[in-house]
Image 1 (cartoon, rainbow, N blue to C red):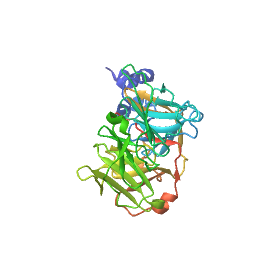
Image 2: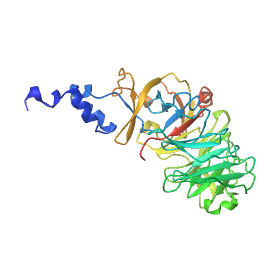
Image 3: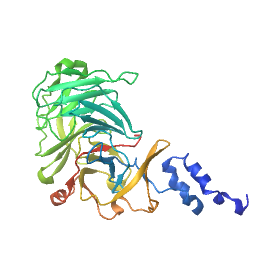
Image 4: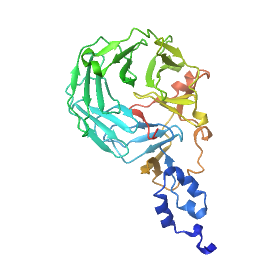
Length: 369
């Protein structure tokens, strides 16, 4: 093929058609071939690198925003959660569960397809937690008024059955900052004093049972967040008053005691909402860090479309005035907009209180792992 008709002279329209068949992760390599090929590549921000903080001022009426702690940018998309006045209850990967207490409605939302899946009405309005195990089971928990739990199961045809109610169980003083967590096929509820209450779906009539151990965390803390790690360990994030301390404890299931962790072993925790996520990351500057849903400001907003390409989701700016290939990210970017803490570093109480908590938000994860 002559130089005049070489690969570098392929029409841009044809190159775009080729790009539309490739995964987003291959686009940067595509752009390195030559100037002509680079001109066909739209600027984009991968959505799968880390969990994203979904936030909306009013679900159903205001656009959804996704904050990326990697790019330190808030992406706003032309989408709402289409459920006015709804409460964000939990997230499981790309799925978010919402409820409208006044209407008794519970729904699951697939953030990639924007599909809504409605569950049967739930007449009781006092449930504090509504969580999904990601396997067709939904649980509503009241830990204050009736000490009740309700369960709803999805059949093989995708239809949800009616809610079953069980109001037997001990009085619980649950930590209000985090959802119950699924671990080993059981539902664990973190109590304020560090104890655990557990629910076994196979023993519905017994409700929650408070375990004899552990008895306490061994640390003073104001806020607590429960999480199952990527290695199926039960952990808790403990935040001291005014951010004066930050500890991570792991449940030793042999002794049933909390043990303090000195390192996250290269992993990263995303917490500060009802859902906490732990991820293994190859991004060195993010390893062994805890990212809280607390921001210094919301100044960087990119209006974008969220586009899926061969199983990968990315944000494509509406304006082509962005150069993401040469953009600085992470610790190379100017400033740090989300509060983070590395285990073992000096306390950062001043920095903690210089931030604002992100209300009406939840961590979501668009990665395939």
